[in-house]
Amino acid sequence: MEQSGTSALLQGVVQDLSSDVVSVLRDGGHVQLSGGAVDGPEAGLAAAAVRVLGADLLLPHVLTRTPPLPDTLDAVRLAVENFPPRSDAAPTVVWSHWAMERTLHRFGQGEPCAEPGADWLGAATWQLLTHQLAVLAPLAVPGEDGAVIRAARSRSVDVARGFVRAVRRRDWLQAAGAGRWLTLLDGVPDTLGLESGLDFVELMGGSDPRVALQLEAARAMRWTGALV
Image (cartoon, rainbow, N blue to C red):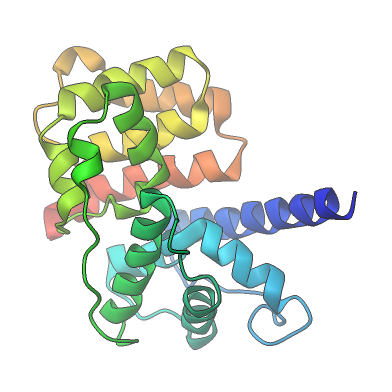
């Protein structure tokens, strides 16, 4: 029961952080954490939530090239330090951690980090590819490069198929993540109707702040991509 309660609390903090990022993506400003998020009594829970949200916590500042608030940077740094991937961690966990390290380095924190391998994506079915890319949606940023991004670029039709499948399965979070990737990729079939598809995902699943974050990120990237 206690573990279930902790999980529910963590999920609530993740949703709150996601809502904050959505608000900044829409209206500008700075992502701000609550007063106890870094060194207060809720620091552990906040660090875990930041780890779940990953590099997307700093996405508005990456897209607008504005400096985050020091407390926000500290929260990401603490999440990186406190939640390193285990030796048997899944590739998506390793890549999510790398994305946080890379984003911190972008803002002058830490040293450059070696990119993990991504051979596991080469042989992935289109269904698995879409699932993994949706988990790694924080890597979908204009002007960036890396093995995961190159894998997505080489299989845009497969990602489009995965997007349609996620919509049909009513997996709105996966659909939103895949749609975010598709906004960056060339070779997406015109018949997909991505704009209408994203609007439908918002209508059906946009009340989930995590879904809304991916959709708002896709919109923001459409105008920032031209500036990179």
